[in-house]
Length: 270
Length: 270
Image: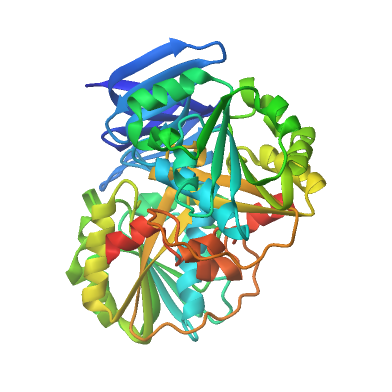
């Protein structure tokens, strides 16, 4: 079928995906939600016109936002994800045997509902008894949270509902919500297309945490295909622990090499 | 202006770039050639509808196809590039002080002509006295070539004029054209979108060379944003030499970490 979904990734760059079907489409109280069946990437979740996750390439994002920080923590038991209503981060977190509680703080109940219905491979772990889902505002929730080991900000872009997740005060409240070995990570957009956002997140995380580092992963359905994550740690980073679970992107070598930045990205955050 | 160039990267995926102007457009004896002024990536060379290089992101491809193999060779003096009529690879090769001759073997004179006229930042080194430009078929040229230190295959996709650059016989003729420490590298497409091409190139290079390795770089205007290069070496790879020139993507750490492959890419070439 010659029907295309087009995401305007910036004002001047678009990604087009041929689709077979629109599986779901609704206006939630927070955003426009759609689930499309694409030819190249399988089922795909779209929020406010921006691709969130697809069946074919979701493994990259979900493995990299979770395993990298979790393996740098000595013994993560209590973990939280802000955003991430598709459940993919929770699925990967629960592969870590030390984890006792994985909290999902998602403002939009409809995202979880649509993911459970249309993306079961991604959302399946939300039914695990260690997963605790809170439908509430991440900013307010964070102010009350305490003693978490690792917190991930798995947000949409810094426009609309996620805007308040990209400000220094939020990173400070994550710091306060973490225990003494605490580590946070936030998705921080593309170094090619949104360098200013990376600089802003890095500045905010560096202000709140003594250790701040950037790492990268290749995600074909995100703008430019190269995505950044900003990690903050209360303590100096230790050698990562070993992993025993199966992965499709992450490897022990990638755990280290993802922090090796191209020169222009190094220059960006210097 | 609401005018867009759209590349059909596969049957089901397209990249759109807003353009300001069509600077040049012609049918050469080999292909359709266009130079467009894009908003996001500056001037851009397009062959048969496929983006070849842009002013904004060309540094990634040209640094990574050249410095990685050159720094693995003990003393590269005589180097050749098959394809690469924009001159970007030659520009990077000539940053290596040991290089005495950098040969460009380009079948289509019009590509060099258009690059000199519209992409001088990329093509400038073609006027260097160490650069030797041959307008001829790379397959025939390779059969006569001897005693090269490093050979790069900087080709278009394996359809049209470049088809013969992706067959085992061509890699064998590169082997024969190389000296005893010889190293080759070929661009080998995207692991996300063209895994079969990577497998085909890896099989061909492995057949001709005792050492074959894959490495990756992030190129936003190429399909999926993640690009692969297949390297063949006559001898076991040594520790890379150090570099003294300035780069924008390559770093000494990237020289090593680019060989650290995501699990699914490792699995692809196992």
